[in-house]
Length: 322
Image 1 (cartoon, helix red, strand yellow):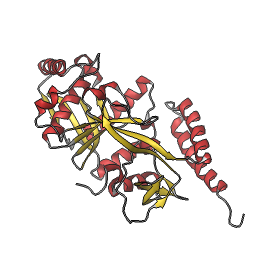
Image 2 (tube, helix red, strand yellow):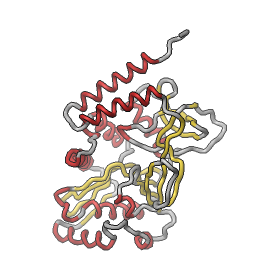
Image 3 (tube, helix red, strand yellow):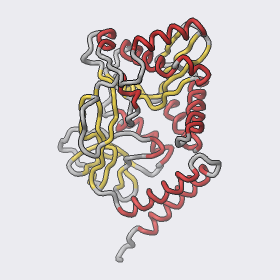
């Protein structure tokens, strides 16, 4: 077990600091009466809504420990509900599976009710049998130590982003380095599914405090006819349950496939008021970044944006005696 929620642990925050924000410090911060643990930069600006690697912040219990007062936090867990129950107005959903109230795997599967148009468990099992017959025996490895598998999953995900027109975070080398650093420090694990010697798909994520948090899920598109993503999801959940995990977390986003198995949802919201200078800079960067986000110009743009934002913060800082 760890002392803090996964994204507030020293190990995770130190990695973010070392790769992206070398001058930041780990602090207990408070906004609107809610306390979380995160990085703080400059003039008490708390790290939240971190675009290169989105994560949520879970409140920690109030006690007598002094906390740094901050004006704004984003991505704070403000409620937990059933997966199909409404959340607070304006909050964003982060679905997950709770296993700690389930006595057996088959009992869990009996409770699954896929949204209309998505495969049932029985259908996924039939497709898995077909894949085994055509390609090879299925084998899921919950914690695969292979660097080659990790590299392949990142490459597949980058290609998926490119082909779908989605934002490709891996076009920025620093983001790729961050994933490898998380792996080097033992925070990122790789879950892989193989059919014989063929890699079918996998997850990159974190397994901390009996929680399996899935950051990247991707599959071998050459096997698309077998619905490898659905097979991977079912097998990964089974392995997580059998390993004694109490949660399997799909993280932020309302993609329909998450609600095949999700039993609960965290709801994330912003607290306080985002400083106008920060908001203006974020919107401006987002507008330009979206226009060129998957072009070869994007890595250079990100470096210029990083340097420019630092300059703007220094220039806009009030001078002593002003």
